[in-house]
Amino acid sequence: MKYLVTGAAGFIGFHLARRLCADGHQVVGIDNLNDYYEVSLKEARLARLQPLPGFRFERIDLADREAMAAFFTRESASERFDRVIHLGAQAGVRYSLDNPFAYADSNLTGALTVLEGCRHHEVQHLIYASSSSVYGLNEQMPFKTSDGVDHPVSLYAASKKANELMAHSYSHLYGLPTTGLRFFTVYGPWGRPDMALFKFVRAILAGEPIDIYNQGQLSRDFTHVDDIIEGIVRVADRPPQANPAWHGQTDSSSAPYRLLNIGNGSPVRLLDFVEAIEAALGKPAIRNLLPMQPGDVLATWADTESLFEVTGYKPRVELSAGVASFVAWYRDYYRV
Image (cartoon, one colour):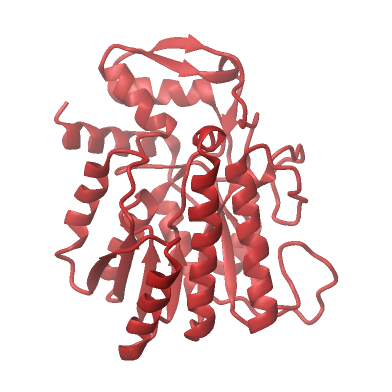
């Protein structure tokens, strides 16, 4: 099949494009290579994708409406996309506190250009990245896609909730099959430098303190990138169907629309996460315990039953093995 992967130079997009090429698909990757974090890491990911059979890259900003419309038209003139996997977005919760308009441009306008491209060029299935952050102030554990998500605690979370609503409107109006995947704290090799694992490993190796918020009294459903990729690939071949018996459920619809969690299904205390990193590095951390930060939530925990019902897959990478895989990559990439 022919796939479009947005955010192909990003953490998850890189792994996904590599997997799809290995499976024999054509993959067109787009990214704007912004400087939210070190561009050299994005370029290094691309350098490993460029030689792969079936892969092609174009540098495009999702928020550039004219460029995106022309891109879809140009691609469809030869062979239209069978699947679009939309991972490109402005990431980060804390960054949204100081740079709100970056989220409007990338996460709202950018999502709309993708939806419009899919609508006008008969894409069979749009899969897009949502986030566990949409659960916001929800206190029901584990988080289910049937839970209400109307109380986000960051603009990033609100933009991801908006993506889900935008997708539903296109599923309803134009019959575009859409699946939103709520990712839970993704980690692994080639990860983002703004994420806790990356920052902790870098600081511990440098002998610097690590900042641990809410005195370490947080827990996260850490999900290895290999599990995320397996979930995406399986979901891609299972477009949602309209539910004729729909009566107001939030995670399905009378339109071809669906929401799924992809998480490990087992939350880990932040302090236990730090201990796993210390074990993988063979070096203790200097811990700087801090108060709760604006935009953070106390805990995340994914209910993954719906994912299993749709795909037959349950995430399986254990935390210790997943952290070790990142540490091995980090030491090799940075020669430390």
